[in-house]
Image (tube, rainbow, N blue to C red; front, side, top):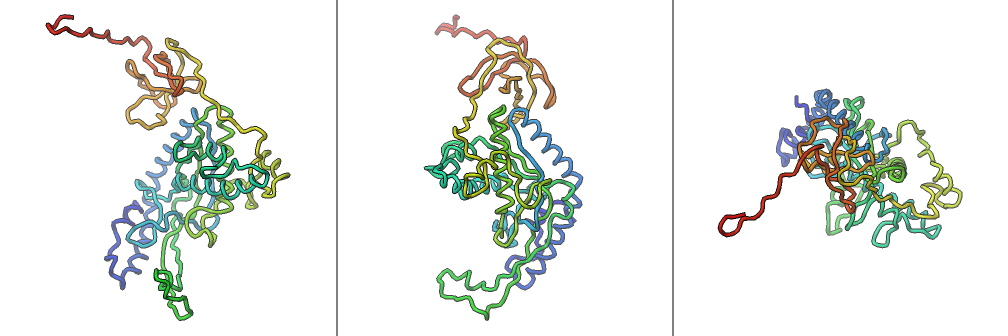
Length: 381
């Protein structure tokens, strides 16, 4: 038996897709093998999950973070309509074959909920700060961005915790009763009581997921925005759910440690509830929160203490360090210190890029090679 449910799903259906007679039984057998495969991948997944948490912790040195564990209330299915040989899909981690909630799905849910719920509350008070679109408000743009510019909040993929991995994939079934009606684009086939039900098996997910959002603005202001986005996402997961079949109750998730009655209101939410007909969501401040610009503390030639962190742009092989003022940069001169992520050292400021909010670092004592003067036509300098 294989240990990667994603690989099994994509490559090991034992009959041809067009074999209508044997296909349902083969699907059920494949789903059973996929469920059992998770036990085989548990050890390696634990190591991968630990690395993921370490990576997020390192990133939070520079980017404020809000995180928590979310429990599925019932079943959840992500990627049900994805193309594959099984007709019904499910999103799994490509490398480990484990259930995964893509960060793009979390961001999309939060953005839509923000526009439809928090945005409606805004309009009741004459505001449109949480609405999306071309005429959308400044708050929605700050969190989610626009087609021309990215937002300040990073939604990471949600990984299932290893303790709930073993039984996370569960066989499920839906029974469409009017297949001909739904598949007839001409609209000439009516749904009737004489239609035959057609049970369709699929896999759904139960378990606990680690969800984290980061803000690319350092300091207290960035932490406010990270918490705000996290509270928004928490409310959306509880009220709307994520993935497919949410109208049937799938996809609901609640934050561990909070009761099922809903998101515990923050001070801002309680303040807004007194004046908003929605009675939920954050207070709309009198003055918009302004995302703080990065301030560069050091100048060229200063020797500063830095911490090695993960490169936010994930450039392979790049050595990225962050000074104690929260500003990072690459070593562009000399050999980068050979230390592990999270360890400290000292580097020299080789250049200051104020517009980008970055430093160029140099190894302490590193010297530039003298530039060679151009030769004339006779080869003389």
